Image 1 (spheres, rainbow, N blue to C red):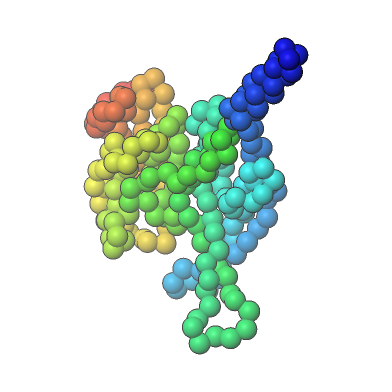
Image 2 (image 1 turned 180 degrees about the vertical axis):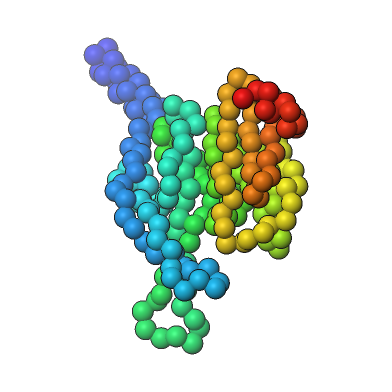
Length: 219
């Protein structure tokens, strides 16, 4: 009976470890292809944009656009793009689909989990996000499209580290210039409108404004 009991114990132990060990996932980004975005109001020609699929275990999880940003050795951030039904209710025939930019997602290479990143006042067509570590800096836009904000978000936090009024939006169709990050000390400069610069120092969870003299002195 002892050999039999040992076999049973061995099977139980192996079964336990088989279920306890996390299943490895294969995460990859596919080949680039060019698609047409829906043209904004007043623009006759549709915009062209490069997109590529995000695969999780060989299956398409999302479509993405732009460069991915490695946050840690385990996670990366990337902007998603999706197709929305653009058919009118009275139309017949095949469904018309339109590509639109979406928000940013965080991808976990170990678990295969894809989750949205909270970005306050983010406009997919206007806000050009520039990443540094787990910080996202971009120009936010008010709901009515008339106001601009300098925004700094940190992954894992729902409220922005910085939300500073940056004036009026002069052109709702022109993307805001991506903010510029610097290291040692960590700071970021926004240029929401021509001739306007706003620089902020980032210290853990604290944000300090930097005057023009201080900014020029550190260059």
